[in-house]
Amino acid sequence: MNNFELKQKLFALRVRAQIDPRVTPCSVSVRETGGEIVVSGFTGYQQTDTCVRNIAAEVFTRQKLRFDLKVLSRDYKLQFFEVAKSGAPFYKMPRVVKKDLLTEALYGSVIRGYFHKGTWTFAQHPDGYVGYVPRAALRPADADRYLRWKNGEYAILLEPLTAAGVKLAPGTRLISEGNRVQLVNRSWIRIAPGKAHRILPGDPKLRNALLKTMKSFSKTPYLWGGKTDGGIDCSGFAQTLMQSQHVLLPRDASMQAYVGEMVGILPDKADLLPGDLVFFMKDTGTIYHVGVYVGKGCYIHSSGKRNVLKSAFAENGENHMPNYSANYVYGRRVCIR
Image 1: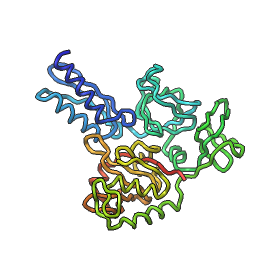
Image 2: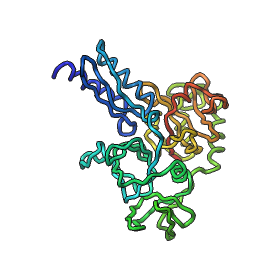
Image 3: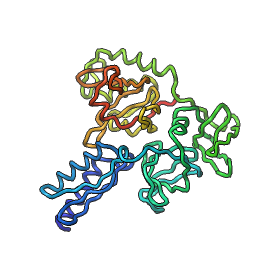
Image 4: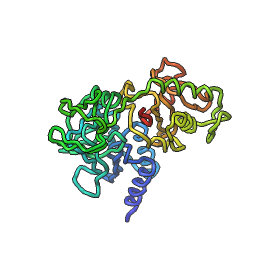
């Protein structure tokens, strides 16, 4: 193995250590050509793009670098697709290889798509997983359909069901109205009582409950590793706040960022509901801060020098903190009552 191959391997290992490609879009490679090192591929966010560039500069010191990188959240239009088959498989690469199967999105799921590659679409599952999905399993959708599926009333099937010639598995999530559910072809069918669990996200009482609990920490100073009203950090605050609502979370923000369903990807953040966690990412590609969304464009958090407070994403909003707003990446829904 020559010197370039060693550095190439080191580069891949360091990127993988910083950016988890299972839930953060990232596929980059390096090659040596014409006396320069070319770094190509794509990453999901501006922060992960910066991370890849910094790692390349550190690994390939004193060598000429050229970057051919796409930032998916910046360079591609936000688009959505609806799963029209019983399940849409997600593969690691755009090919059918059994060992590369990552997960499946069930019928009716509205997923985020990034780009097409032949007969495949690179997409993100509602739980955050990214991979290549056969385009034949998908139907185009729009932001309104996504928002209705994400924030509106829905039903989870408790038993198998065959509808419109498609066998639907238990766990399939469908837009609902009372005892009716809507199929991908926009037709409605009735579901017998006991065969589905109905859910209406966005408990109107939850916001007030979160703000009430926050008051107990209103004068609490920031303390790294703290969990009491004598001192508390951002993830400790999120963990304590959500535990008051019977939601158990792991300790650190970087761990909490894996829990629940991904939300908060619309530019206006209309797909956030009170109780959703909101995450912020460093240029190292790692999650470093977390807050809890409380509606009206605001989140509550333990914010370092400014302690526990409510902040607005909008520049002209209450306690706006530009360093956080600039580094926001996505939310996670951990409470569905």
